[in-house]
Length: 396
Image (cartoon, rainbow, N blue to C red; front, side):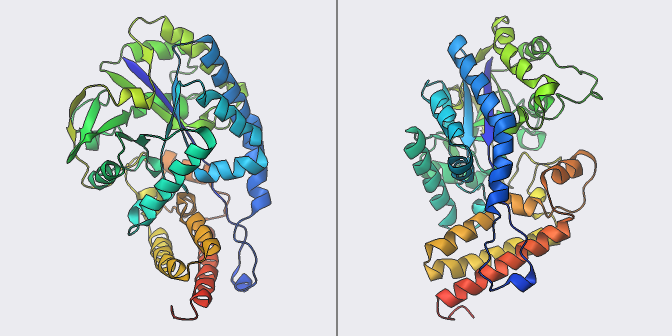
């Protein structure tokens, strides 16, 4: 059994308070100091200690390897707030046992926009990774593990050898998530699936004292992994699992440090990167005519587009994008793309219950989804007005 540990690194450019009376004021949309302060805090609690631990494991365990996706907005903030985090990332990538994945530069919903936004963002992201790490990724990960047959066709046109997707029953139709599959209609694109139960045991449940398996030890976890049938187990989670979502006091770093030895003690487990795993023989083809994701219990796009607020904001953003592209102003384009980042729509989530609602509230700093919507729309209207001015009023 191959174990694919994949960690996702992302921080959005969060909006500043932008009121209706601020339209035309020239105030920035994004609160740079607050964003950088948040980044510095998470770097102290998560990025530095976790990357240091992972680097140690690569040094002491030649068989250990893992994979990372790192958004462009993350690297933009890291370059200012914590450049040593980029150095630590470069250090682990240089070992040759850490794979990097491509995705949208802005962790955006570009895959729902007309061309060429998606291809441009993926090209931008690939170029950034080449410049920063000297690596050109061959496996694609869409925002929040979004996947569909259309996205597989996009991956094929961009010459990717594989994509990641959620190992959800609605996609698998009774098949297990522990094999490599092929994309229906794009058979040269391999699908590597997330084993969501085993991933969430660490990502969500690790520090929960109400969990009937608490505490989770590396030996117990390795036993579960060794008893899982199949060829490959995808352990996909946010990087902030390590030190932020589960603080050091929870024992998460001790768990990580002991895991390679616990895995080594099992004779049927070994580590693999995403690049290595997608080369395994595939079991069958899978079709996703409707886009799925790894978010919430419904595994769809409802986390970002499930209510009228979100849909209204996204449709407005699409229309503003047409004006911005006509304007041909790089600053306007960058502002618009930062507003496409999926987090802004995530904060507008209304409804849900239990774990879904709790996760949305955890990540949002707004008093309510309606506050998030109003703030976003004020910034978007201001951007629209700037774009109209830039094209000489032709967009009116």
